[in-house]
Figure (spheres, rainbow, N blue to C red):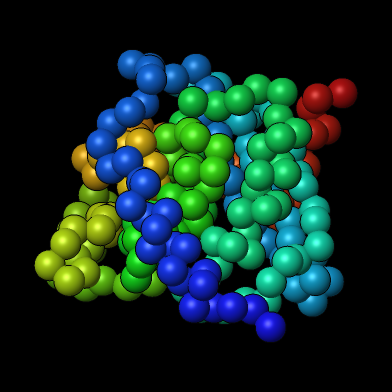
Length: 224
């Protein structure tokens, strides 16, 4: 049996360690990563992909994929305990260690302020940003239809992130502090890493690698 009460208590404790201000250690990074997690074989295998991009060109220069046995079942609100072991395994395989990581998932935009981006950032001590495709908690004012429309994501009278229209006729992104970065800087870096798609390049590439999408297959073929 999984002691969910103990895991929730651990989340609450770890959330107090999350740094919500800029402790980036760089002015302009050389390497930015994207991280994405999925599941295979009926959820029994956790797959994590990390893509390393050179900044500012945002070209893919390295990737690692880790597949490990899934440690706990899916439990709402406790996803980071399920995803982080594979993320750490992929991180340990990297030749190039990035200075900033975009994680496909929530940062502090989580009921106990510890989504996978925050949890992973704390574990590997690197600045992280949560870039999620859906809302986990919080409320926001409805956005218009224009690219760039922005709203604050609020939970219990606290701003926990941004809701941002990144591409026309697409659902918005939910951007939140992961670790060692401020709300404003997190949003700014996501904007700086857009290249016309709904997702910023780091998580778009991580998703492409994890799912073997055509863009990644083409990139592989070009590597000789």
